[in-house]
Amino acid sequence: MESETANHNPYAAPQSPLAAQPPPLRQEPAGRAIRLGAVLIDNILFTIAFLPGYLLLLEEMPADAASVLQWIAPVTGLLGLGLLGYNLWLLHRQGQTLAKSWLGIRIVRTDGSRSGLGRIFWLRYFFPTLIGAIPCVGGIFSLVDALFIFADDRRCLHDHMADTMVVLA
Image (cartoon, rainbow, N blue to C red; front, side, top):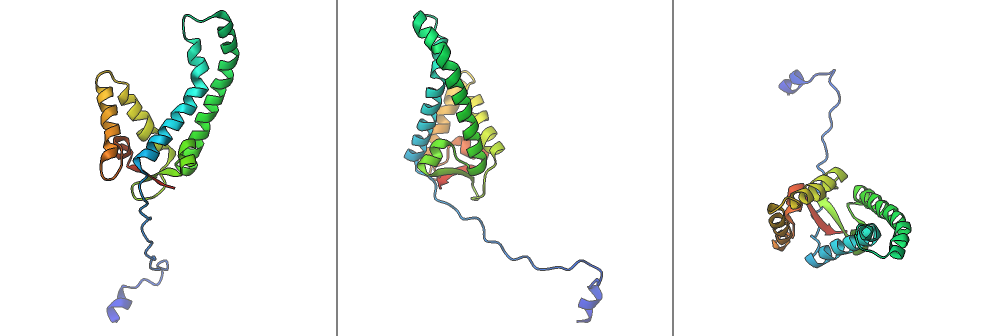
């Protein structure tokens, strides 16, 4: 008893034991089909938004179609940029794109905690897309990335790069 009082500093800040916090819940990984559906829906939405702008790049087009597209392309381009901004906002707030929220799945860290927008955008989307654009290597990387979904943990290569997983929301 005497040794406890000898080591006790009466001027130290009060100490309280921290309650052990339970680890974040390990959530159920989303199925392969629902993840594929979310990617397809997101890509369809962006294709619809930017298609008139792509069509303007065609060299041979009737003059009347080109004049119509010149009015439609800026509007749909703005809608596409709005869709991109909304998806980034959803990713930041909820870890979901529009399609992921419709299908009831979201992106989290592997420990179950929230994944930030920077991690999702740069490590899950930007760098894998950049690697996929490299001639010869990109196609192989993209194929391997997609095939990783067939592992037991249902995580693609970009999930491993970002330390994330897609779970049921």
